[in-house]
Length: 444
Image 1: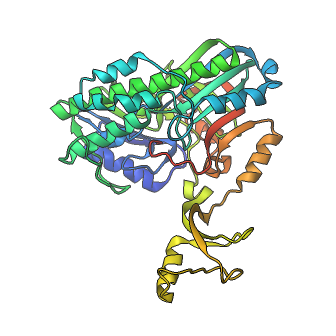
Image 2: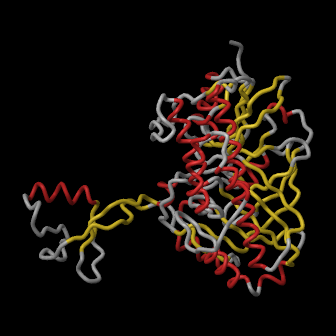
Image 3: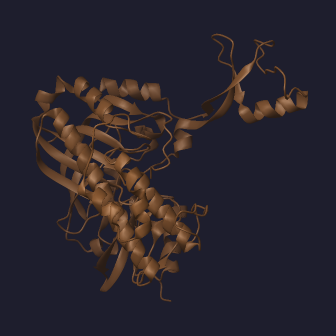
């Protein structure tokens, strides 16, 4: 096999590059590209694109099929919004559900739900009830609803999230099928540096995956439309311009003279003239960009960044949440990890009796609770104070999404300056995300 051309932009981790090379070799790819916001992902790196002539990759698209961004410019002037911004952000956070479940019962309907009920891939039809419940919910992690002050004087709305449980269960089902199981089986637990899961696109399973992926993508688009429309309703505004696209998806495209399935995980399509919305962090400007006609476009598989790119894992930034044993004495803040407590109790032979490790209350007792068992590198109280000082109304959020956990967007965009141009800069004035420590298995 001849050497597969791999294009890497910016300063990215060698392990992420190795992941991309492994994915490209496994499917005899036409080419691979890793954008400047790239970092290690499951099998295929985040920020990576691979063009396979004959294969489609469920592991490459990932669990959050169709995750993407939508931005709209409103007809509301930023100056007219600012005085009412705290109330608006309170209503956004109250009426739109973040994390698991739905915290309001406002009816949501959409033609995509009928399409799921009659899905070409029959096993997806059983997912329609859950899809209905989650349509228009945002999820956790780095998913958000933001209000921006545009450089044109108007307020903008931007959202980032994907296909929620419907996409996650679709991806998990196909990974189970590829391993010889049933669609309803749990997907095999793979190592981060596992070989990609590849399906021949002309096989029955491959064709079924393409149909199922496209339906999950339509559901993700619908969800973002529903949420943006809700924010416009809260603002009493009309959209005058919009940009909307996926960054976890696969498209049939032509590159380097070959027709191929381009699997993009966490990178934005950027053909010449194509526009995209790329989010930064909760405290820095995001952008509307457009692909340029450039020599490097085809080598990058017409792809660009989808965000700033992490420099710190979630655990490094926020610490780790787990089960711990806390002293029940009033105003006592003593705790130990649950495992340490169990081991100490067993050594003491006190498995069924009152037992404590608290040195301040030796006759007290301890209770099992969820809490932080490892401290992170980021002081999120300080981050919130800094954001308040710059005029950003934050609702929810956590240390793992703080600006220090990410690269700077301007720096990663500079590595793609020949292939994209910035059309608008959008300064955040309102940010809504899932609250700290929200558990959501459907985030990307």
